[in-house]
Each structure stands twice: as structure tokens, then as C-alpha cells.
Image (cartoon, rainbow, N blue to C red; front, side, top):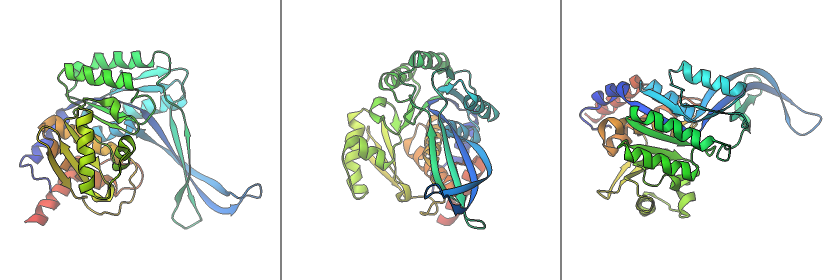
Length: 338
């Protein structure tokens, strides 16, 4: 249950929050087909193409979730000068994301992740292959300078900065450190989610790694939440975070706040057996960031993020939660506790 007495006001306030989102914007492609035979050329399935669709991935999915909650979003990141880049830009604009801060790179193809989903006729289809195209822009000429220029221009409008790093340039250490420094100088909170470069965001207000990401960066392991606590505490102090929110899949979340040395464990919301966890981390970052921008309270933000994550993992594919779904879920919790 979200115990904050003003949770309705928090959700209503999200439409007035201005978010500056810096990250790796990816394009998801889904190809659906039928499998009913094996190739004579090699021991592989032959997939008969049926249909395909496109979706927003990485920071683009975070942007979609922020817009689903009603927030204003300014996007800062890069796109390749190709058809995929044009498609991704158009999809962001259709959602109402402001894209003036996006940087075009002629020497990098837009990152596209293609998933082939197939199965026998009349059976449930499953993902059988993923093909990724694209590489990091960290070494592209002018990338860092142009992103920082866009960031500097847009920072004055922001109530909060979110960084979504998927390993394609947003977590480049020098650039990430500058983002944190600029946000702190402007007294704008910065919350980040980084798959590979957590230490690059030293001094951020909070980070939202999952357990495997935290284990990889610390080189430590644990069996339960009691074992997680000292690892998260040490890491939080080491890189000077105000808070660390660790997502734990079916085990929920754990939050550490450095100033008060306070731990909060949050059990998973809803079913512990998800339908699809794709994009759940994007929802956590968006919800946690929006709630913190309104409340300046990490625990309330974490509890709302936990509810939102519980909603999206019960949807097939990369999906977003809505404010109405959050309201219904919170009301259901409150009814159950009476």
C-alpha cells in the first residue's frame, strides 16, 4: 500500500512536472511469424513472416511512460541520420515528447533491436531470436559537446533530470559527471538508471539499479535482503548518492537513504510471476523520478514506483502504466488493508 495521505494529489501533480530526460533512445522492432518446418540448409527454423510492429525502447520507453503519466518531457540524446532515426523521432513526437534537444549523428546508425516472435500454427508464439543493430556514440565526433549544449539550454526549464543509460553513450564517464555537476549547480535533482556505468553518475540524488547491475559493479554477492543491505549502503556512500533504490524482481525493492541511514524493504506489488519484465526498469525510473520531483520523499517515490512496476510486468511486451491504473491499484490496496 502507498501510505502517503496525499497520494491523489501526487498523481494529479505529475501533469505539471517538467522532466529533462537524457539517455540512449532505442527503436524496438517486432517481427511475428509462424514456424512449421526446419530448413534443409541448416538445423534452423523457417519463420513465415506474418506481421511486424515498432516500439520505443531504452530512454524512449522512459519518455513514453512519463508522457503516459502526463508529464512534460524534453528529450536529449542521439539518433542516426537514417530511416530508423526518422521513425523514432516521429514516434516520440506523436507521444508529445519535445525533441529539440536530440542530436543527429551521421556516422552512427540508430540503435534498433529486432525481436522475432514465432511458433507453430495455433500455438502461443515466443521470442526465438533478437538481432541488435548499432553501437555506442561515445566516441562519435562532437557527440558529447552537442549533448551537453542541448542539456545546458534546456536545464533551466526542468523540475528534475532523469538519465537512462543503456550503454550507447549516455553513461560516458566524462559526460555523465558533467550532467551531475550542472544539475547540482542548478539545484535540480538528478536520478539515473545505468546498465553499465553506475559509478559515472557519482553525486546523483539517486540511482535505480537492479540486483545484478549492483552485483556487477561492486563485485559482491548476497543471498537475501539482509546481505544486500551492506553492499547497497557501502556503494551509496562510495559514490555519494542521497539514495539507492535496488529493484529485486519478484522480491520487490529495497531503498537505502544515506542521510538517515534508513532502510526500506518493499514487497512486490501484485503477482510475483510476471508476464513480461521488458521495460519495467524504465517505468521504475519514470515513476520514481516524477514522485520525487513532487514530494522530495524517496520512500513515497519508491512505493509508487513499485506499484507501477507491478502493473507493467503483467502486460505483454514493452508497455506503460497509466495514472488511472495506479489509482485503481492503490485504491485496491487500501480497500484490502481495511
